[in-house]
Amino acid sequence: MIKKLAQYFIFSVIIASGLFYLYVKNSGANSGEIAPDFETTLVDGTPFKLSDLRGKYVLLDFWGSWCAPCIKESPKLVSIHEKYQDQVIIVTIALEKNDKTWEKATDKLGYIWKHQIVDQNKFVLMSSIARKYGVTEIPAKFLITPEGKLLGKYSFEKIDTVLSSKD
Image (cartoon, rainbow, N blue to C red):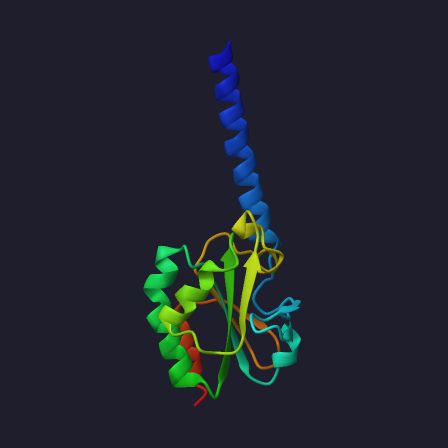
């Protein structure tokens, strides 16, 4: 009897997790729409509103200091910053359980840009900002046009292609 109840419980958890994943993935913004705006505070204490960055491309990078793939691809993000800093504003959003672990990582990785956000949540992908963009895994990068339209979730290669065509 207990074994059967445990199986039903595990099955229910799997189904609920799958439904939640689909809900988050499908409730985020779509390409071509105006990028969902949000207000928060940067790590330096400055108030931040995404829509205030219109006029340049914006690259939203969702990452975590605990995320090995995020750390592995960080040199590419730094390279994009160095190559296109006159065209694109990078906004990194660290999804963290602890709001201090990101600091060592950003220093080590060379994240020197101003627009850094730490969104602390016990369940990191439950971040209100991440949910607006349908983030279900990290790293996740979204490119936004100077007019504020969401181009979509892009790879570094696609970001480089878009920005290099604007030179």
